[in-house]
Length: 339
Image (cartoon, rainbow, N blue to C red):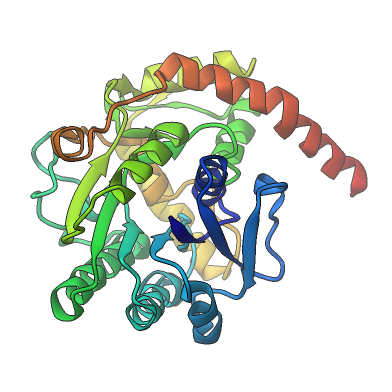
């Protein structure tokens, strides 16, 4: 394939770039001038400097390619709605326009299972309705982005596929993982409620394999696929195993979900009042991700894409632990010394 990857310097994008380059695909990456590209250093890729708001850079990046993996997006549990909308909605529209003009043969959009909100029944499928109550702009803008992709497929016949992962985890995560590591290190990591809620996890290696399977579809027709790990791991089991793998203090205190929800709302109100650019200690999106019972039915991905979980939960933990000790901690130590 001749493929463009947006969000290439991010957790998922860089892992995907490495996998594509390793199998010999011709890879173009869209990166900002300030992007840290060390995660795919040494990979034979063509770099285009720009972003999803720069239409000229998108025209250059899509030209000559046949496949687009749209991994770029505003992924955070805090920030103004305008920023989420600018990146997740307007940025997706810009890339869709460029892809249509360039004659892209397959547009693969990385969405998220958060578009379903907090469903009343489990497991969720690709037919489960979108969330109707937006408790966070990330949820709203990911829904709008999906709808744009489906609209461009219907109106302009752009061959498209949508992939919805759960909580992406594993070695290389510099977004969610650092906060968990910080809380655990300070003894502030707690068990949410009873801790018996099943987490919808997508190990990075399994998700990348699923995306490559999705790219192999010969006649993309706007299908949506949920890609998640098949093992059902509770939040209590996840955090206990995670802290053990990293030699960190395990969570011992159990706090009712209702109390944490109230605290998160207060934290968010205070952060808005002081106009903080930093995420508060607790956010409702964070509680949703880790405190909601969520099971995704991946039957469609198994049957249509041949997707199978390749890396087990225990193997993924071992990989994460090795990365933490060999790369993350040494890098963090260097950053502290340089301050």
